[in-house]
Image (cartoon, rainbow, N blue to C red; front, side, top):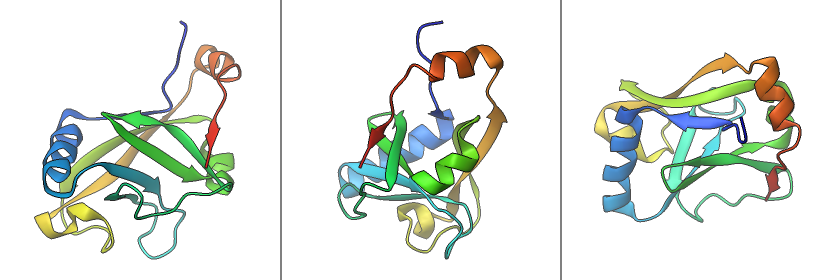
Length: 126
């Protein structure tokens, strides 16, 4: 095992991301820390949400960066995240909100082997 991904997306989420990219151009995700919309993954046009030194990039889903605050990452660092999409209204600031669907996170704990690999993979900071 040479690389472990911290974040992935379902086929349905990737399809929605592609549709949103056609409408809005390049996108980014930021995992909400509980303010306003609970712990929803929020999708924005790239650059509309400014990341800073207190954010870490967990990876990419499709060609879209996925960010999380460093404080939230401290709680979730042992967890693999999968972005999915379900019917319903989600975050009012997230781009998918007007489509009657919302992004959500499904998670599982990393295995010990995965954690061993992740220890050697640096995180990118905003």
